[in-house]
Amino acid sequence: MDEGNNNSSHNNNGVGIVDTSKADKAMWLMKCPALVSRSLQTPSDDSSRPVAKVIVSVDPLQSNDDSSSPQFTMELISPESGNAPKRYSMDMSKDFIPMSAFSEAAHGKISVEGKILNKFDMRPRENIENYGKLCRERTNKYMTKSRQIRVIDNDNGSHMRPMPGMLIPIGVTEKKKPAAKGSEVKRTRRDRGEMEEIMFKLFERQSNWTLRQLIQETDQPEQFLKDILKDLCVYNNKGTNQGSYELKPEYKRAVDEPTS
Image (cartoon, rainbow, N blue to C red; front, side, top):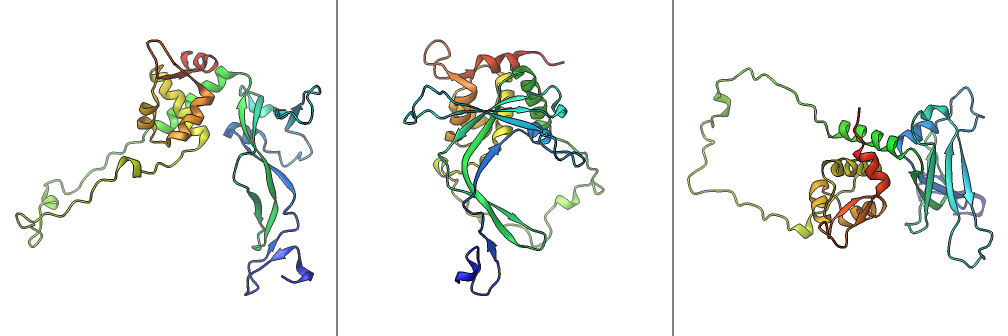
């Protein structure tokens, strides 16, 4: 890289230029529900109108050496949110792999927009019952499988008979591949919001689940399920339901309430 082009990098062929002039700009990465994302969309005819505000709560009695961090809350201003919650907690996390934000222009130029300083996960602080209804409706939509009936023209079964020369000699069988061990099976994570909705649906079916049962039902990584259970459920250390999870009271009210 020469001194006259400190804000961009390229390979030996002179292609793939990346603008790094804003690489040190601090940015926030926020994961929010789909209904919040729709509410944050600014109308094209009124781009100056605010759609939300972020409130930072700091305890003035704490010294700078205290390990506690400020609390972040977002309030939606847009009226399009309807009955959805308008106040959300923004759980901040600094324990993540360093990341940067990139953008690509129409002509192919790539720019570094900044580096991720903090990561936030949004959770509703009000209207938990209505939020639970919305989650159940979305879960029912995702879990409903569309079935189709197909008419077979050739219904005499001739297409299912082996053709000459395709018969397998007796005693000659294909070697079966050994089944993968349970420890070698890699499970793919679902979207966090989608998994929470599936969890609400499962606890609507029955009130108590063990971790092993939930892994079998959802086919999700164990640590990923533990993180979700930590936010949504309480663990029974004793009693008749010892060793199982059940929803926290605020979420249980939303799940137990009958839907219209």
